[in-house]
Amino acid sequence: TKKVIIVGGVAGGATAAGRLRRLDEKSHIIMFERGEHVSFANCGLPYYIGGAISKREKLLVQTVEAMSKKYRLDIRNLSEVVKINRDAKTVLVKNIKTGEQYEESYDDLLLSPGAKPVVPPIAGIAEAEQLFTLRNIPDTDRIKAFITEKQPKSAVVIGGGFIGVEMAENLKELGLDVTLVEMANQVLAPLDYEMAAIIRQKLSHHGIKVILEDGVQELQENGRQIILKSGGKLAADMIVLSIGVKPENKLAEDSGLTIGERGGIVVNQYLQTSDPSIYAVGDAIEVTDCVSGKPALIPLAGPANRQARIAADNISGRKKTYAGTLGTAVVKIFDYTAASTGNNEKTLRRYGMDYRTVHLHPGSHAGYYPGATPIHLKLLFTPDEGKILGAQAIGKSGVEKRIDVIATAMKGGLTVFDLTNLELSYAPPYSSAKDPVNMAGYVAANIIEDGIKTIQWHEVDEVIQSGGLMLDVREPHEQQGGMIENTRNIPLGQLRERLDELPKSEPIYIHCQVGLRGYLAVRILLDNGFDAVNVDGGWVTYSLAT
Ligand code: FAD
Image (cartoon, rainbow, N blue to C red; front, side):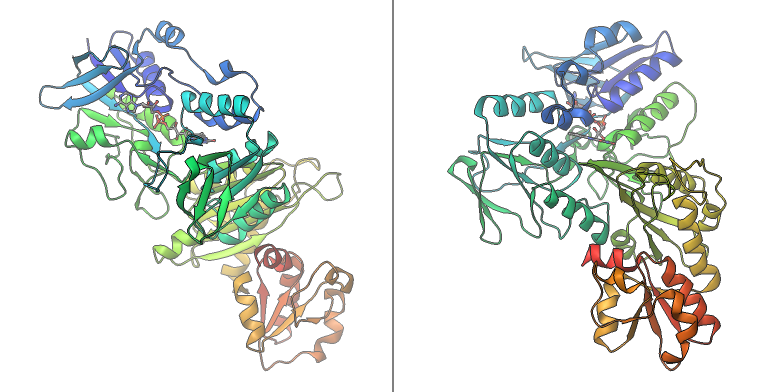
């Protein structure tokens, strides 16, 4: 019988173990897990801390006993694999409880050791008793116990990624005074600046103090006093450190497996490492970014689960390949949802890729049916073929559905033109006959097919400062809600009659509320021999970002 050893018993490891058993009743499958728990809900941890998930046992999706029995697995928790002897095809295992070490042989080895929180060498960090990171059940228990016993009044969350934002929200829900500190000029790195600005405002609106472009220099008074790089000081009863994760690659590295430029274990399309008997999946590996084609670390549960199934298939003799990761992700921020897929503008720029952008703010469903709320949607695509490069969306309702549709379109190699032809479900409480995804396709297609010129929110001030003519085509009363300085106002309804007020000698930059009337105005002007440019996303994108 074949003997398979799995290192790591949570997302990737447990999924692979189950699949391996389903494909082969006879093989001997040993799953080693360093911690006490296997197959727990890491993604649910912040919500247990905040109280949305009230019962701890709900986090324990499987127990060692139940899972061993269900899949006839040899699960050994509190067991760390400390060494791989590739020549002998054995692993050295340390029993965490007894300290005893022993060897175990394998035919195939699957590594799913995950990623661990980055803890930088900040002065005073070792003495900070109320500083926490969050990865597993013991971390969660520690945070929960601290909150129950010590009743902290204030918390500082360091790092504004997914986990940081989720923890800030959950601690706020518990009634703490929360400050979020982030080194970059925005939270949630997968989003672009102007989209993340919406989330920053949301966090502030809910009473979370957001400090951007600043980091922790030093911790004093056992972590009660945080000295920021800017010189500022923060006092905190507790600190959550969530500045990112890094692959647990030491075991792989020590055994001579190839580690990539990003620090993850290198695998081929079959998820084999540089040693064909050793497979690796999950947060510990480098994947190919589907859009840029470059190696990337994308620590998400969906990819880990899918990779685990593919690796198990390959170990069982079915040839399956992993085609790379889009990075589709979603996060809750109070009553908002933010989701994204593919590359963002920052990444495309970094790789020198040519792209175009559109911003839209369609309703989540038909405006005449009660309760519609805007979806702030951004689509990135190639200027000629309209290949979809990425998308981001934020709003209260229907956000992740739109991103998932676009992610599926990207996976299938569809273009922005194909988005215009997607047949999506519609009834007034759910969508519009032109779904926001169709709309994104139309706006993008207008740019490519009809050469409609646009400028982005960050170019507006420059146009005005250099004396460009900015025309606001909204109704005058809409300007009371805010307006771009130094613009002329001709409402769209009067434009055809007032064309003689406009010059033909220079470009006319047009903006409306969300971009649609601006586009209509551009069409009218172009047809009358003017040079017209639309402000993409209109006043809404401009005002949210600036
Ligand atoms: P893990 O699930 O981390 O499993 C690795 C296991 O291997 C660990 O338990 C570790 O103890 C064990 N291990 C490591 N080395 C050894 C060794 N040498 N011997 C024995 N055992 C070892 N992703 C999403 O997509 N959506 C979310 O909402 C989301 N929320 C998250 C919230 C939190 C708080 C955290 C921490 C993560 C979240 N993630 C989320 C990420 C997701 O949990 C990971 O992408 C996923 O768990 C990765 O699976 P993995 O198998 O690679 O690693």
